[in-house]
Length: 132
Image 1 (cartoon, rainbow, N blue to C red):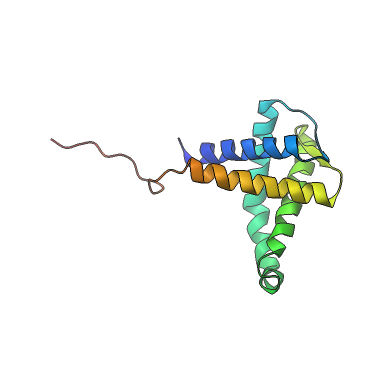
Image 2 (cartoon, rainbow, N blue to C red; image 1 turned 120 degrees about the horizontal axis):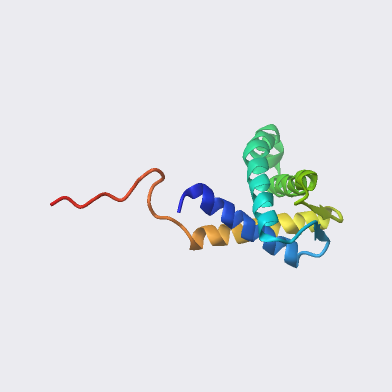
């Protein structure tokens, strides 16, 4: 399965779990198509804003021994929900703590699924045909 599709499905499952188990997160819609679109938005937000925020806040990340990345992830989780609201597939968060726990759940589920569904082949390699 292509890496992009695998990441999209992992993000979709992680977001679905966070929306279902964290109190204070209210989705607009709960259909799987909406969750897939939200996962795509989540991936784009993390790809564009995540590295930028981590570079800009590098001194704070170093000063807090990496704990500031939890706040960055919380902000990116909240931002994904707000952007998703524009497209009708987002979620609202009641405050800081639901966003914090939601981002933590997404991170844990994403890492667990990534380890479980890991592809051992290097990126870009294809199985070779056997030569006779």
